[in-house]
Length: 244
Length: 260
Image (cartoon, rainbow over all chains, first blue to last red; front, side, top):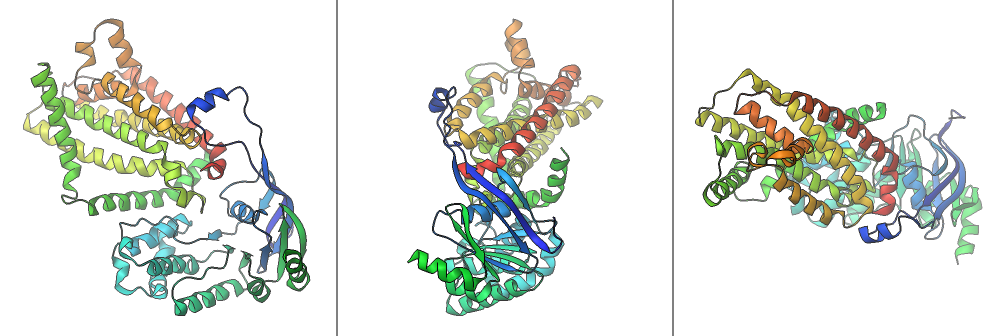
């Protein structure tokens, strides 16, 4: 980490999808001597820093490498070229219902999900009551998840990720789940999470209003490259004009 | 390797928890619930004992126990290996959303089938008491034997998991190969007594599962020592294979998400 105030430093990031296509044995024998060299570069040399406590929005049309980059920052796959430095911060990609095992109870799924996100058992023990309360699913918490309605399912999933908080949160499309009331509540909770000044957040969204309301800076990706980086006031109007 | 130990420390609790909940899920779905963990190996033992003793008119001393030991260790090996081939794409939901060292997925499967193996070996002990099989100090050799079995299973399953990501019909091939090895491993016959000459030596010594099975029987029911040197060799091989497989998945696991 070059600058101590930064939570995330991305340098010259390139991510490629190589010819690692699934193939049958017949095809792999055929091709063993002439491996296809198709390489698709989804992110083509992107560099940026996010200072601690900042909220950065990422915009760009579909297929411009936004989600790929988020997943790389979350550590799901590593860069082909360049570096991503998150120091010793904990990172989570806010995603719903990770690793749910439908046959067992909601309570057990909280542990499963939480541990997958890298939290210790004690930490989950401390937070579990808060999660259950926030999810508003009452007695269903001790029933198998397969008996849940889809709304209950996503409410529980949201509560897990929202209440077990990490230093860096990556959000792929602001989540809105449940009925109107829970939607409002979850949106507020998200805002509260995001606004916390110790937390660093990257949001990918197509909604300019949300981004304008929440973000300190906006990164505009276009075909895997940075097209513009600046405050929402600078970037968003240009982006919107470009898209229309 | 340091990374392996660090990851193991960080995720072993998840592995345990996930094993537990998968076992629970299995129970929740069936009428006889956990009874199947006992019935399943028991019934298969009857099937194979029946075929060998009644149909082929062959037998070994304490034959049901003989079959049972072979069957239990084989089932652990086979089920884990088979399940590992498609394990990454089956866990697409998890793998594409959080980072998880992929060998943890194999460990969960090993936990599930290992637990079942423990139950069926408890049944073996009960049967040994029932048949009044004398036991010698050699029975302690089961510890290194099981460790070797676990390492072999882990390394092969991890490698198969890796190739299973890229080669779609690997599962079919594995099925055939495993079935073939099943008949060659001497689960319901003794390789030593039934297959003579060089072929018998090859079958027994070049197939670690057959060797471990044979030695488990020697130390558990026949009061003999195991093939110590051979087991040691296979132990070393399995450690090396495990290291290799861990290296391979650490090198390539990043690209799994891009393929599935």
